[in-house]
Image 1 (tube, rainbow, N blue to C red):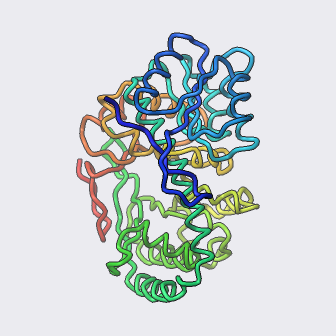
Image 2 (cartoon, helix red, strand yellow):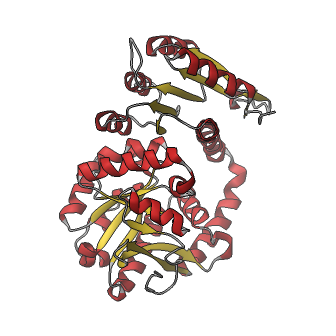
Length: 397
């Protein structure tokens, strides 16, 4: 029996009830529609089916879904048109697109309107189930995060906890240091650069997501961003390659970043600003203008985790990056997954057409490395070449 797909009951009632995950399946091929619907229902999903995009839109008017799985080439209303229509009133629900004929134009439109995944048929059923399950989980997680933030904002009992967090965060800033992981050119066996990864000696915030989460909650992202950039600036002269510096979307609002007199600005030609937490770009009204200013200063722009989620894809066109990083979930065991190979091949081709350099992230095995090389992705990062270290160490080849 398949794993039962269930989602926690929606928060308005405060109930802890569990309901089936709601999936909208739009597919004009009757046989595929039946196969997919039967497979997801067997796993406990509540599945509504539509034979074309207009029928899917009609269902969306009366019901909310945790995920949408749709073919692109459908009569009356295509999957891309359905994606566009859904995004006009719902920016959250994840939409997985499938196509038997991948094209540059549809890939660009999928990116522009924030598809969760762009899959090339034939799709392995097990992988399709995994992607849809992940999409629905992200959707619910986003809902729960908003509910949690609302509760935290209204709960006066957390004031003492906030004071404690402030003290912990201060210690984390005092103990902040940077680790550097190599990025290589393969098969040239040459160093391309390093990614600077934040670390701290404060054990309570030792994990970067915890440190960033604390900064968000305390509204001290500017302090963290400046500390990171200054720490990189103090070390960058020792690097023989480019240095990738992670940048939270909120950092774009910090005039210190755009100040030519700031410590990192003196090294702009050597720095790639890697934009993270891109969902926050919606709150930066002049994001495009600020990014263009950074480019004029000599910085290059990278987008991380391409393929990891619809929020990342939505911001792709807005940032017009020089470099994109393929999410490690795409890279992992790529030599064993034909669908992943097709998708990476399409992404790499799209990047080349746009003059963008792709980086394969999370490379751990020679098999993954070799397949990425065959697919045209020759900038690679991962434990195969070196772990994050305090010093700028040469990669292992």
